[in-house]
Image 1 (cartoon, each protein chain N blue to C red):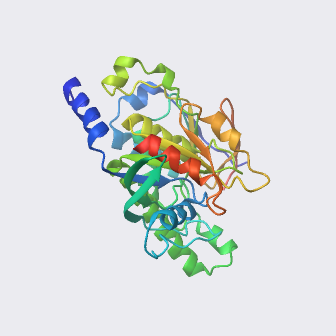
Image 2 (cartoon, one colour):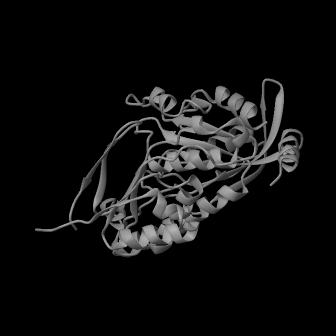
Image 3 (cartoon, rainbow over the protein chains, first blue to last red):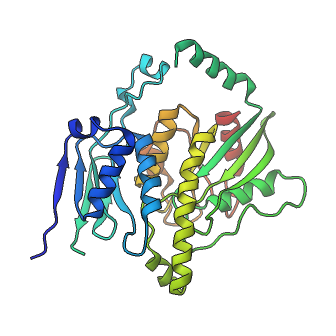
Amino acid sequence: MSEIQLDLVSDAKLSGMGSTEKVRYIIDEVRKGKILVLEKGLNPLDEAKLIEMTMSEIHDDFYGLEIESYPRDESGTTFLGKLLKKDTGRQKLTVIGPANQLKTLRKDNSLISTLVSTK
Amino acid sequence: MGVISHFKKFFGKLFKKKNACIGIYGPPNAGKTTLANRIVKDWKDDDSEPVGSVSHIAHETRKAQRHHKLEIESKGSKICLDIVDTPGLATKIDFHDFMKEGMGEKESKQRSKEATEGVIESVKWLDDLDGVILVMDATENPYTQVNVTVIGNMEARKLPLLIVANKVDLPEADPEAIKEAFPQHPFIGISALEGTNMDAFYEAIAKQFG
């Protein structure tokens, strides 16, 4: 029976890493065939960096990532936070996996439904 | 950065934004280049070349195309914009998808490689823009990660964003779904191909980026 490893990654683990380290960790784990569920996701700048670094690694046997998260909730951003450009909007749960194994079936504001397959 | 420098930047943006640089972003095949071509056709005096070619095959635009100093007028106000048509953003690019469209393996792999470089260029452009027009295909689910990421980046950078629901001429289009998905941002439904609702689009541009 084929098996797929699913890692539930706590916010504490990722928040202890720098931006590049975080993105490197995600790509390395996904390239091993793991599905990651991030407790609080990535901030938008890290998401952009993840896309950029993923693109630089795409080759014949790696097509990239499937990544899905909910839109961020800006209501968590205070007026003072906005004034000082503090990124206080709430980040949301995120699922990431290899594009050839993780497929999004349906996504809306309250549900992400995915299909995980073996290679 | 301190509060005073934020105020300076804010008021600087308010009064000195003579020639803002606006990026057209979105997933592949949302109609970004069709929209860029439409804008150039509508506002260039001379017989300008189109910004780029369009195709039903994804990642037709693989290099960002910048069009300088377009003067757009709407309801008496005039703004001058540089428009950057960016390659479609994606988190995955599989060369097999191009082969399914009839391309050979070598050509598909080359297109895939160029497409990845295009996505990297699009991400880098985010650092150099004054605002973004985010183009979504009104016939598709708006909750794609590309849309979520672009919107999140504009919010994090505190830059203006205009969401465009394109392809409203198609019977299966559901622009209201886009509006409901991201209610916190200005929204306009158009057909860049048919030129539908373009006056309202330019009005929204003047209001959002002027």
